Length: 432
Ligand code: CMC
Image (tube, rainbow, N blue to C red; front, side):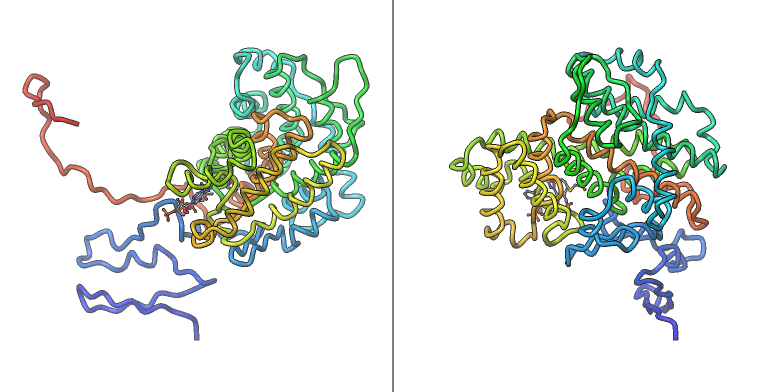
């Protein structure tokens, strides 16, 4: 017998059988519950979508209570140990790990698309010298839409695959230009002869006229960080990507919107905020006073807590190990001790324990980026490079999903009922 939920409407005494599939009921099945036939029917109220599945997905699995994260079934820990970002991007987009030939062809395809149109440089020059790299990044990704009008052919498989490769290849180049712009340094052109990460390092750190070789440990660490950030199911920015894309916009403007959502300090902007917080705390002896301020409601402990994880974020575990490998090359950060002390206190303090607040992916990533020589303002952009793959994989899944339509939530209207327009000279000032 199929699983069903029996609902009794106490207002009418009527009973309804609602099918349960995959642990969910369909919200539209509630619409039949009404007092009168001309009524709209019952809806659910779920601000911030805390208990609403907006799609069926086969990309990323999270069990927040157990601290499990898998891409296409593969545990994140195994991918972080054995895979590369390029290979993982293929996996997320196509559902399977590539063969050696497929990987070679995917890498070659990305290398073809690293270069940015020359006018992008002029476009970037319009930004003020102190423009935040994330603002430059998301604007430039949106501007790419005007360079590739064929990107509007989102249901043409070949055209879509071209835009997908372009986006994944070009976001590091945009990030490189945005970073150099914020430093007032000349842009470095991408070099397809280098590895994906080696090229990115060079675009950021190379001195004009000199050779640049990135350290293999740091290169691998950034590769791992990009893998860890690549997808995270229906988070705020991915929901934005799906929501914007549901009106059939091209992927560049959808991705610009997703990047804008990521920019906020509660999401991908948290890594930058963590570093600023650690710098503000300064030394280990100031940690207890800072924790007290957080508990008194004066701000949040950035890099802690998660909507889905109610145990240690599995990405944070991998990042913590990676941090030690990086520090062996770069020397340790003075802020590491502050971070470790914060974590130690928070993990035994009832405020954090009772709310199940644990370090998330952003708690240690900023320390690694800083040790690698990145300025804090580029941290959210680094997150965006990795997450671009997830945004696109989720966008494509949404486009091909017959259940999906333009995203359009309902509301509960509690404002004024109908009233007549009042001419301006008859209006009485109301106190706000
Ligand atoms: N510091 C102090 N208190 C916190 C924190 C925190 N970081 N996070 C949650 N709380 C408290 C919150 O005040 C609330 O307490 P009370 O029940 O007394 O009102 C309770 O915990 C539940 O918080 P919430 O706001 O309902 O939780 P949420 O699921 O809506 O928010 C979150 C999740 C990530 C936005 C939040 O934990 C937060 O603001 N964390 C800091 C920012 C951060 O690190 N963001 C990166 C998230 S991971 C990367 C990504 O995927 O974006």
